[in-house]
Image (cartoon, rainbow, N blue to C red; front, side, top):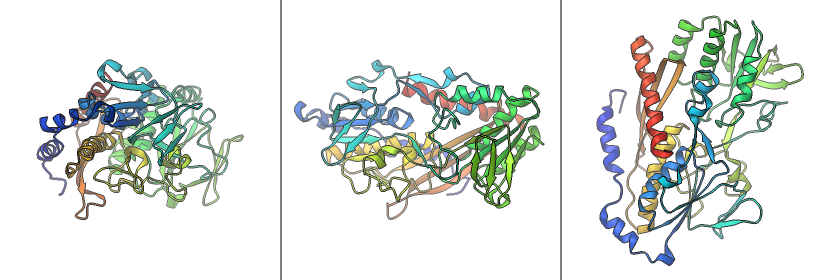
Amino acid sequence: MNSKINRRKFLSNLASGLTFFTLSNLFLLKRLNAKSKPKVLIIGSGIGGLTCLSYLNKISDAIDIIVIDKNKSIRTGPLSNLVLGGILSEEKITFTIDPKKYRNVKFVYDEVKYIDSDKKFVKVSGDVSVNFDFIILSPGIGYKENIIEGYNPNNTELLPHCWDGDSNLKKFKKQLNDLDRNSKIIISSPDYPYRCPPAPYERASLIANYLKKKKNNSKILIFDSKNSFTKQENFFKEWNLYYNNIIEWIPRKKGGRIIKYDHQNKIIKNEQGNKVKADLIHFIPDQKASNIFFDSGVLDKKNDWCEINPTTFELKGFDDIFVLGDSINAWDMPKSAFSANSQAKVLAINLINKILGRKFVDPVFLNTCYSFSKENRAFSITAWYRLNTSKDRIVSLGSSQSSINSSHIDRNQEASHAFGWFNTMVNDLFL
């Protein structure tokens, strides 16, 4: 399948392949004895976790569902760069779950400390534990330490990376506002894989746009641990149009990989030994699976990502533990909210098929990623996926990307599409 793939036909096949339960399926579930109702535990109420919940909620009178998340308010990763760029308020990406939307579902707001895969329970704060028959884990991302000497990604009060849509968005925005004219900003972009591949470059674009409006006349240097990046030609085109002499990209081969950070003097050192001083240094950390997997011993510290069965999303080596989203190795699929949403639909449907002893659906997946260069300009890449012939990995069937010669009207329409996708998704899940 190439970039000329018929998107409408693919989406039609996706819908038919993932058609939800027939009346006979639902009837079988309702016949389960009330005392033997399967207990499904969902960890994480972000895009992936809530998409699973929205599907499982359709049969919530036949299974017990518990959702655990330490946060009552969820800030989405999608559009968070627009908050940093002063285009949206933080309230526009902050949501709370309406419990009336999900009937017969129990919500627990606490932090999961440990998962006992043998005895099938999770331990939360204190001595409280919650049992499960099946557990779905969508906890987001974790961060690697000791990649850059002198930098700790977990010290977000000192150096907020804002890669979780967390409360440090305000702190980072204040750092931008406090910059003097003619300041120098360094943004460090990590090596693959990481959450939302084009996001560091979108962030640089929107920060440049914000400072340009303030007539700050600052310079942004992107130190990159890679020699190329997603949507590179589209970003270059936008930077030439709007941020010429403001944004400079430094690939790894030209000194882009940072190995040391001197916080006191605000100096970075690259692997070539060169030192650069800046007024604001912003690290986007190298990433791995969420710490809960390592803390619980279900993921070896030699591995960065959870290996899963791509048909069911069951964690390899463990029964009845399912993982999706940013913490998994999804092969050709990137780590994104759209990917997690697509994966969650497959996981939820095949989980019910497992409970019923029915045949699994053969999954197909879709991912669309929008990037903004300013408030009314965006571009995208869409890719389609299915399982390989051995059904042991997810492979790309092709992709379609916005033209670098798109008109302003085209870019404006894509921005509208991005907002439309976001609003539809959060309305479906939260409101």
